[in-house]
Image 1 (cartoon, rainbow, N blue to C red):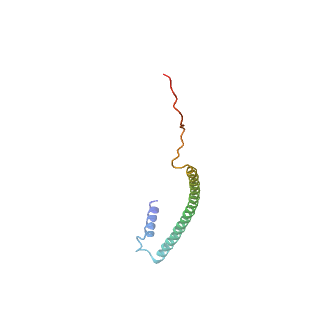
Image 2 (cartoon, rainbow, N blue to C red):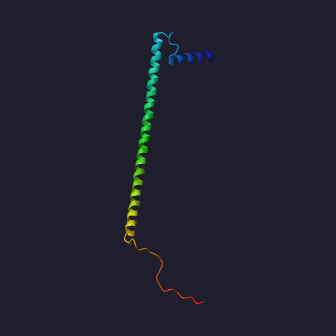
Image 3 (cartoon, rainbow, N blue to C red):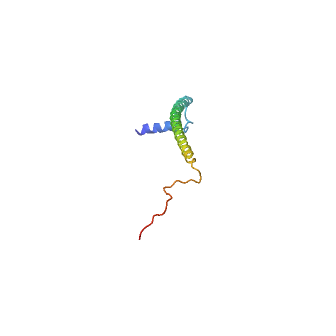
Length: 111
């Protein structure tokens, strides 16, 4: 088990670029091939993740755009209601005020 761990450690160091001075050209070629394959796999995975993120962000953009459109429609409807309300109240002149008061002679009270 200790021998296996030591071999894995040596291999790891070689993949990281340490301890290559004692390697023959054939072994260096094998290490280069392993690194090239690893790099290819890493780039494929990275591209896959970026595509998934792009799809997710486009979906979020679409949802936010729909929500924005809905909110704009609600705002437009509220603005129309305000204009209609203001249009009704503008029929009354600036000096007219509606109250529940009436003008009449005072009522006499007997004491």
